[in-house]
Image: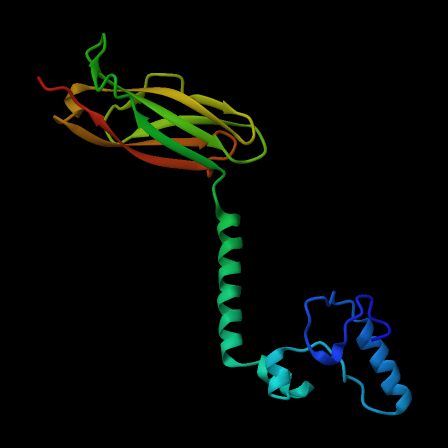
Length: 201
């Protein structure tokens, strides 16, 4: 009681005024040691341990229960999964949005053209150059600029025009894949599904 900076009586149990400075523990252990008595009369513990009168060994036995090992295993698995997801993630995100203003149109050479808006996000800290490609139809090609340059941690909206020959199209929608890949590292690649609309004749 004399060493407590907040003036509480530790003999009355847990009190909200306690700031956890442990001055009473040190003073009690010092007095008990001088008196030749076992230390630990005032100590850190839990309400349950006090009610069950657990000694030091009993507290450790109660701590290492099957439930604790199960929870520890689950926490470890979640932690490993989190680090694995961060390690293997691709620092590139791509969203493909069709241009709803022009579904499909015929260009000068008779080819069919569809327009898309690509939302490209470079989530790495270094600038990168990407190239756009498209697959899924015979003769499908990118008619607009295929190169995209992004600074680190930036997003850019890019218009992409795709053209295909009418012979390679079936009426209605045709499934295609639009790919965005880093020029310096082809493993940094994102494939997004889209549809290419043909024109009825």
